[in-house]
Amino acid sequence: TLEKLWKPDTYFNNLKDGEIHRVSMPNVLYRIYKTGDVLYSMRVTLRLSCHMEFREYPLDSQVCGVHITSYANTDDLVKYRWLADRPIDLPEGLEIAQFDLLGFSANETSHAYVTGNFSGLLAEFLLRRQSGYHVLQTYLPTILIVSISWVSFWLDPNAVPGRVTLGVTTLLTLTTLASGIRASLPPVSYVKAIDVWIGTCMIMV
Image (cartoon, rainbow, N blue to C red; front, side, top):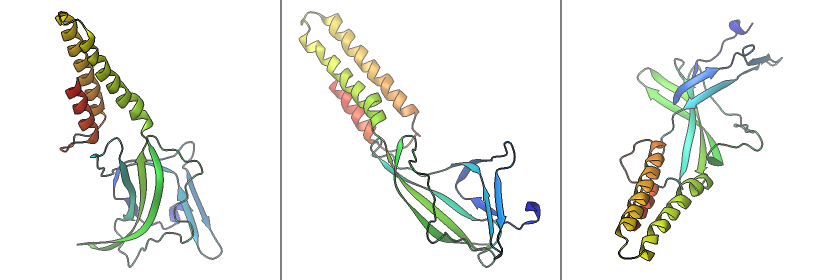
């Protein structure tokens, strides 16, 4: 019956990778009501692209969205609309790794291409990065490294090898820590807040 049911050719504009769950059976729900309405639901896992701004990283907020539209049917054939009362249904106590969900919005969109005008839906989520991880893994270690480097002021003035070893060791440790932070971020051409912090720590060392 499901194969005979007409379904809109919905696709995700900002999709990078996706999976339709089929264990142990295809995770699909459909119901046909007496009024003629059809409920069609399926379970998918999506990896979506999101344009992020890292100038204030790691104290930044990001807006990421899900953009749904039709691939071939123009808006005179398929018109997408959100439910008026509850467009997005989120589970209670939702937790997102590294982020706090501050809010979301649901909008209806329209796009004009050479092939025609297409209706679509846009769900945007306002995310604020959690700072606890970076306080423990970045800020506290760099503060300790700078503090340890200042121990050379209390060394004997004639203990040159000790001061050189302490300075070089702390600087190399700070450089290694900064390399680990940069490895987890995309290469961007502007200065981030974490770069200013690391640079200031290096100057202090």
